[in-house]
Amino acid sequence: MYSIRAYAKVNIFLKITGHENGYHTLLSRFMRVNDLYDTITIVPGTFDSFTLEGCKGVPLHSNTIYKAYEALLEPFPKLEDFFKSHKVVVEKSIPSQAGLGGGSSDAGAFMRLINSLSQNPLSTDALAKLGSGIGADVPFFVYNYPSANVRGFGEIVEPFRERPLQLELFTPDIGCDTAKVYQAYHKYLLRTLDPKSFFGWENIDSRTLLQLIADPIALNDLYPAALSTCPKLEKLDTKGWFFSGSGSTFFRVKD
Ligand SMILES: C[C@](O)(CO)[C@H](O)COP(=O)(O)OP(=O)(O)OC[C@H]1O[C@@H](n2ccc(N)nc2=O)[C@H](O)[C@@H]1O
Ligand SMILES: Nc1ncnc2c1ncn2[C@@H]1O[C@H](COP(=O)(O)OP(=O)(O)OP(=O)(O)O)[C@@H](O)[C@H]1O
Image (cartoon, rainbow, N blue to C red):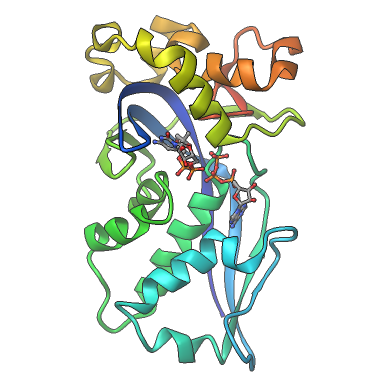
């Protein structure tokens, strides 16, 4: 059996920098959450076709792991036979629609695992490029840096050297649909975009930036958009907490 951890991420900050071809470009600090992860295991057996267990309620062909499998067939055609004698079992711990990158992390980790089993592995850059077609956050999870500055649609990932923060997470029972949050941002907030307001943030370590800026609305452009699409978020007492991605998870520094 082969196994890999698919870690969650938080966005320490997320600033929208533009909009092209229906997608927003961003500058964001992604930080890996080392104590929250899904576990993906490849288990031997006999199967008629690609078999995935553990992602209840997600149709196979919509699953990011299946999409990663399909993308990997091009560089690794023998993969189809491999999954006649192996299945994928996922132990989910990362909540969905939580701004924690769960589906994207599963895809990125699965791609790293399969690549590591190949006699002719792809370069990490080539794997990340392949992953960018599955979801904007997948490249970050293919590179698997503890902390990184992410740009473009999510395909430009630059490692940021800093001591990882011990983070406390709070995920309310409110699902935030990423598409709806971005639509709200595009409709109401894109015009407020001001690159000068976050000049140099990519050079500041995460602990300092959270202390310096301190305002969750200023740190994450999607937070006000999420508040408008998920009004229940307004009712929460979130003083001292920061907002991750398109939500609904809040985080703060433990130590
Ligand atoms: C919010 C983040 O998680 C930040 O880490 C990501 O930007 C989300 O990226 P993602 O998971 O790939 O988003 P998806 O769920 O695939 O995108 C859903 C929809 O959100 C919008 N979307 C997504 C990513 C992006 N950079 N700009 C967008 O405008 C698009 O309309 C897209 O069709
Ligand atoms: N492997 C997977 N794990 C969880 N959800 C998945 C997976 N594959 C597809 N999905 C679908 O994608 C939707 C979004 O999943 P999730 O929120 O975990 O991923 P994400 O978009 O990468 O993260 P974020 O919450 O940061 O936007 C889920 O509601 C589910 O319907």
